[in-house]
Every structure is written in C-alpha cells, then in structure tokens.
Image 1 (cartoon, rainbow, N blue to C red):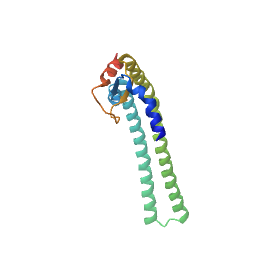
Image 2 (image 1 turned 120 degrees about the vertical axis):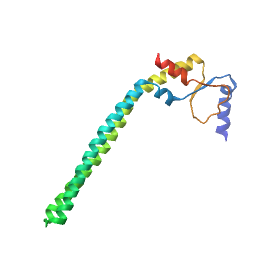
Image 3 (image 1 turned 135 degrees about the vertical axis):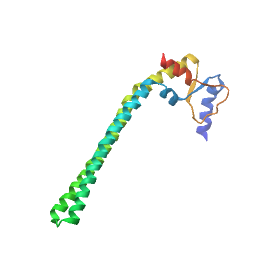
Image 4 (image 1 turned 90 degrees about the horizontal axis):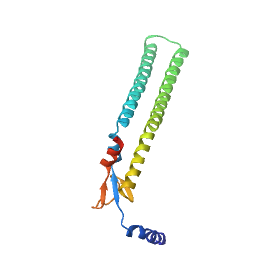
Length: 164
C-alpha cells in the first residue's frame, strides 16, 4: 500500500502536466513497407524449400518402412536383417526430426535478421514523430488504454515518413 501511495505521488506531477498521447498500429506500418513484404516472401520461399525437403525425407522413411513390412511378411528374413532395417528407419526418423528442428531454428534466425533493420527504421520514425508531434507517450494500438479525444493515431504519418 505504501509503495502504491509513493508511486502515485511520483506520478502526480507527470499526470498534472499537459501531455499529448498517440497510438500507432505497428503491424499496419510494417505491412505497408515493401522491404517487409520482400522479407516475408523470401522467408516463405525458404520455408517451402525446407518443407519440400522434409516431405522427401518422410517419403523415404515411408518407403523404407514399406520395404521392411514386405520383408517381414513375404520373406523369411533373419532377425539380424530385420533389426538392421528397424534401426535404419529409426535413424532416418531421427535425422528428419533433427532437420525439422534445424530448419525451424534457421527460419527463426533469418526472420530476426531480416526484420531487425526494418524494425529499427520504424522505431526511428516513431521517435521522430514523437519529437515532431510533441507526444509524451506513443502507445501501440490495442494496448489496454482509454482512447479519449486527446489521443492521436499517428499510424498514417509514420507510413508516410517511411515511404519518403
């Protein structure tokens, strides 16, 4: 209770002064940038390549399993051969699982690398808009706030800044 009271006392001067607030739809800004759309297309293409390779690996595993089932039902194969085939299938499954994890990690890292400069550019534009507009706070659209008449949506102005 004491901390709450102290926090309110510290915030009182801030709340009492005239301040301007703004909101921004960062996702709309992001989706309006050609470099973001290009990055998304690149990531989608890479994802499709990984998916195709994983499908190929899965197909190979399925074929190997069918061969194993045929071996078990039609031939009188020695136990050692059956065990080796099971081991091969398990190794193939393990490699496919490792590939999937590696592909997901690569996509995540590439996404972060590709979006970092775009996000930095957006952050700089938001900061500039905040300074130019005299805003005390710029909140993300959708944040749990009261949107009164003193809140300005600067999404379009940020989009304009970034397309210049």
